[in-house]
Image 1 (tube, one colour):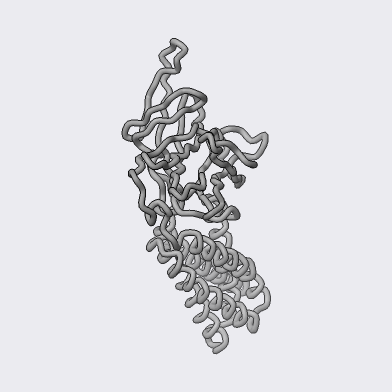
Image 2 (image 1 turned 60 degrees about the horizontal axis):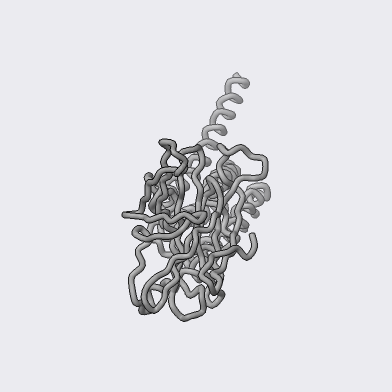
Length: 334
């Protein structure tokens, strides 16, 4: 009889643990409903997600890392919740701690809705301050009941601290509209209908695409597409907003090659630079021109040395470029 009773107690604990973790993961799932559409690339591979299109700092992690990190953090939160819950709901300090925990969990989900759903980094920055304070209050309340439960929340507040710093940086970088939208220009640049050179060969995009033969007498075709990630600011020091944009090239093999082109604005229109090679099967993150720097920053993810081509890019990299007085796009450093 005692053995049966002990099994029931263990089973009840397992159910409680599963419920506690599930509640926390559910908050993550609700948040992901707003997050995923904003970070996922378009199904055609040509359009940009909102998150990919905004300016992000160089220390911004690749988009794929957020999912595993949050799953881990929500699991730790669930375990902490279970430990405190086990102390008994008849205790006033337990009910208060669980109430504070619930508030921070709601604020956690609300941040995803504001930042990714509403595309409002400024309001999200204000909200994440309240989230951070709620997490701190939860840790303090849990510590009075169970120190292990409180320690399980430390990685959570550390990550939210980093997320808050990242949120602030993104807000600062994107709070002003791109220069091209604020500054009068002689013509409107259309990256989907333009001509530039790749490896010395002219490429003309029509409605964002160019299909040509490989020039070797075979039936293979080379497809060049407008990818986007546009960034606008003065790269030549003449006070006019130049526009950088990415294109992809498919030569019929297994790789997709990424290039960047700068449309240099002049008094009579735009003149394109050469296409500068970024990498093969990379994951572009952002294109950014720091104000008054005359430098073009390309942030992207690539594979580690020795990793097979089928491996998803996971290593952050930044390519710095400039436009020479002759109108040539060249690298500064990598």
